[in-house]
Image (cartoon, rainbow, N blue to C red; front, side, top):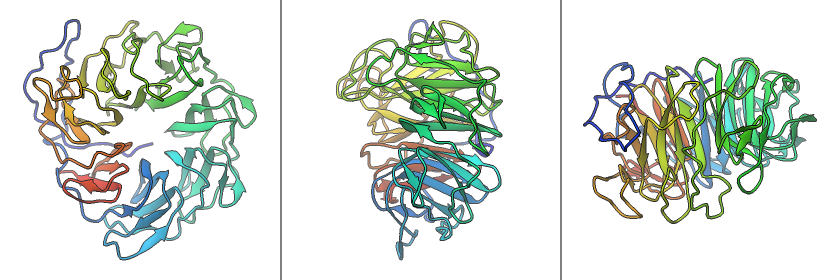
Length: 421
C-alpha cells in the first residue's frame, strides 16, 4: 500500500463554470496549505535510457520500475546497470547496490509485499535467470525472488496491480494466473501468490483489440476496486471501459457511467482509458485518458472526477480537457489532482490542437483543483516526449517518472521529485 499521502492542501482558485448537467463537488478536506514546490530536488538518480513506468516508496527505499537498462548517481559520477527495476534511498538518492535484480522485460507496476519485499508485475518471462512470467516478489535487501511466491501469468501481461495488505489485485491481458482461469483480473495472496477462488469477476466483449483490464485503482478502505480497459460488459452488466467492483465478493456494483461510451480517435490504441487514483479520504476518484492525433467530442485526453458512490448512470463531477494531448498518469492528494502526459495546455475544452479560449499552458505536467477541476498555478514544466507515466505522492513530495530529461528547467534523467513546501 502507498504511504499515507498528506501533501499540503490547496488555496482554492476561481470558481469554475461547469458544462450543463455537471455539478461541482463540495470542497475536499484540507490538510495544510499549498501544493508541492515547483523546484525539483537535486538528489534523485537519473535513468539514462527507456522510460519509467511506476514508482513506490517502502520506508526510506524508493523502487523505480520501467523499461530501461542504465541508471546514474545524482552527480552522474557513476553509471550502474539495472534491468527494468532499481532502488535508491529517499532523501539522499544513493542507489542501493544490493538490489539489482535481472528482469527480462519491462516492469509496469509495483506493490509493497510483506517482510521487506516488493511485488513486480509486467511483461517479462524471467527474473535472475529463472522462469517468472509477469509476476514476482523480490527481496528489497538483495533483489532475489522469494520462492514461496509462485504466481505466474498465463498467456499474457500484467499491466497494473494494487495491494491491500494480504490481497493483491492484478489486471492485464491474460487467460489465467498460476493455471487458474482468470480473464484480465484476479486477486491473489500477496505473500504466496495463491489465487483467491472467491474473487472471479467476468470482463466481456472487448470494444476493440484484446480483452484486457488496462488499469485499476483500489479505494483507501479497500472495499471498492475501479477497473478500466477494453471491456464493455462485466458480469453481464453494461460497463463501457470502466467498472467498480465490490471487493468483498468481486461483484460489479451499481455504479456505472456512460461518459466513456463515445468513440475516440484511437490511432493504434485498444482503449483510451489510462491511470486512475482515489482521493486520500476515498470520497472520489480521478481518471485520465489518452487518444489519437485528432480531437473528438467527449472525454478523450482529459482528467475527470467521479464520486465514490453506488449510483448508476453517474456523471462526471468535473472534467478538464487538454484540447488534443494525451494524459497518462494521475495522483490525487488532499491538495491537488496531479496529472502527467505530453499535454501542452489544460483548461482547454474549446481547443483543437491549439490554445482555445481560457486555456493555460502546462507543459507535460499540471495540478488541478480537486473542487473546481481548473488548473492550479503550479507550473514547473518538463520536456514532453511520450509523457509522464508515473506519479507517486508521499508525505515528502511528489515523484515523477517519464521518458525525458528536462524537469522544472533542469536536467533530471527520467526521474525527479518535487518536495512538499
